[in-house]
Image (cartoon, rainbow, N blue to C red; front, top):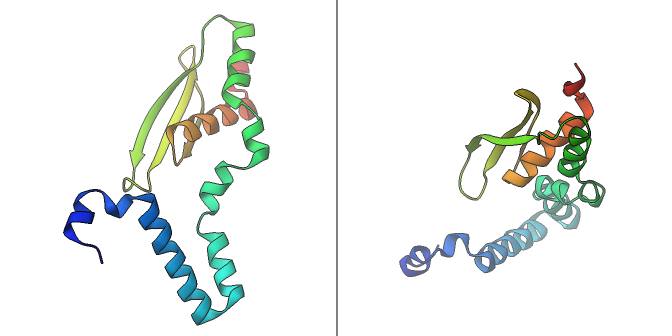
Length: 132
């Protein structure tokens, strides 16, 4: 429950309110189901977002690697295009593709445009459609 003033000023999406609510729910789960149940749920909820922050993935630069590889073949750069954007404002899913010389090389989806473009570039690097 939230006052009209707080809700009207963006309180439903304010980080501090969301973290307080998450903490309260986590505490209730702990009190009701125990430590293991709370631990399991807390680790599952942010899994998709944490996956995007995986240090092994963030070290690579798929977009840069793809650009460098393709520009060795031609001065033309790959082009990224957002194909769709779906979901609630706090749970968006973006789908992007990457094309080069008019050919689609890969598609990717993610919770941000940047993540979707990186996944499209990773797909392109794996599938190597520019060779066919």
